Amino acid sequence: MTSGGPFGTAVEAKRLVENLLSDLRTLSTEARKKHSQVKEAAESGLVKIKNISAASNEQNLLTNIRCASAELLQPLILGCSSRNARLVQVSLQAIQKMVQHRVIESASAHIIVNELWHLMEAECEELRILQTLTPLVGTELLVTGQWLAKVTFIVAVALVQGKFMLKFCFEYNNDIAEDGLKGCEMPIVHQTIRVRAKSPPPTLRPCASDGYMLFHDLCLLINSEAPVWLIGIQEMTRTLGLELLESVLSSYPSIFIKHSEFAQLLKDQVCPLIIKLFAPNHKHMQITSQHPYSSNTHSSIDSISSQLPCSPERVYFPISMRLLRVVVILITLYYNLLVTECEIFLALLVKFLESDKLGWQRAIALEVLHKIVVIPELLIWFCENYDAKPGATKAISSIISGLATYAQLSFLRPNVLEATAKDEEQQFEANIQSGSQPGFQYRGTWIPLCQNIIPKKSLLLDSLEKHEALNLPNGYSLSLTYYCISSCCQSVFEAVESLHSQKEKKDVARELYQSTYTSLLVAISLFLDASIDESVTEQLLKCFVTMTVLSCRLGHTAGRDAAYFALCKAALPPKYLMRISSASGSLNAIPGFLTAANSQLDKDTLIGMF
Image (tube, rainbow, N blue to C red; front, side):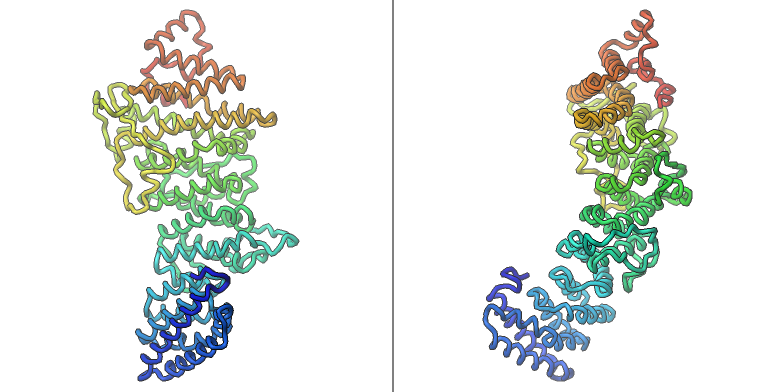
């Protein structure tokens, strides 16, 4: 790659001339017996380069070579056309050097691509073809349109090269993000449904159009449909397709956020595809939207779920894991564009926690939720668009309630989940405690706390090389639930603090607390009852303090009383507080979800709490 001005330094120019002269001499020597046409063209090229070198100075040598690139390429293209292994090797080597020094004109780029296509069809020098295409696409904006479509197929034969090509198709020196629309004076065309678009929207420039069509075809390939723009490729493994999809969505959010054409692709292609592929993971996809605007959204839950089959096929971990990686990106980066779609994804995540799911399904859903609940801005947005909307889904309430219920059922596993989670037969031995490892003990069952769990590193979500789910450490899922609850308390505190300072947002702050305090206090109380580690107990007490401070700051009397009662209940002997409350006649004032006996919560109470 050159680095000394538009066409490089004088030293690089001299080196290029020497290399081209050497390659052309080799080409002439190798071709003299059977390929006279190649020999003559190579000798003509030698003369041409010598003349250019003699007539040029250090400043304009590369510029003059670039102007004559079409003639200099002729012997190299003929060498490739010969299909002679040695001639092809030398020719591709010389073409690579010309591309790297940026002396190829755009008018000649399609000639190179076409010849590489023919070499690929002949299965000749595949590795050198890929090595040539990489700088051809990445160095300058030389290849667009149908030629880029050909390039993408050639490179798709290798996963690493395919990811690289997709990267440059979207990046192109940030061309899409900078000039995605033809100008501010042009009105934005709000696209209608373009499920099988055969051409890009007219508002996009060539480079952005290529990215649009490539992304569109990628979605079709993941859905096992034939592409409409890519040339020569009819299918792609779903795991590879989802990885490429994730790569684009995570690397270029500005493209989708700034340009309505790309945003529409998310609604029309990506989200319905993800939800459809989730179908085998759920026995009953009875999900309905309660969002007030869902009826006007193309990707409404009703329209999508009605098309989903109740598939009995086996849940495939590599697909499920990659789907959830995409869901994390869609929720955390594109939530402003996908109001109804995020509602669907959150509902799916909560359903993953149900007891009829596989053990790794519940664990991986907890990993996703952990990444979500640590972001205060997301909780605020969820509250504004769901929980605080009249008649809408209580999304945050459902998430925290699901976490609390999962914690309760996990402690009751020997009695409740034994029959429904046989895939996860990891029976915990009673009365086993580790002197060095923190954990929880409940009704004779000891569950260790897995430490060093952080949102950025997940056992299951980051298992891209695995074909089966890992054998999870003992207590991993319950530990994830504990970290979700404690992280959520802190996120709610930060969110309420941010909202409370804005007069117009105080109602949202109160609604956020209202949606979370009940389930958070239940979960915190249960973990505190079962904790046998001082550091865990200290963290849970901090959560109590957080919830109490918030209730006082918001003037939430019910939340304050519930927090005080839960704390007293944890501090006093079993049933002691209940006897005092009963004797004083104040039992009716105690929050119903906390009136069960101190640590001996019965199964019916736990299951019926929500």
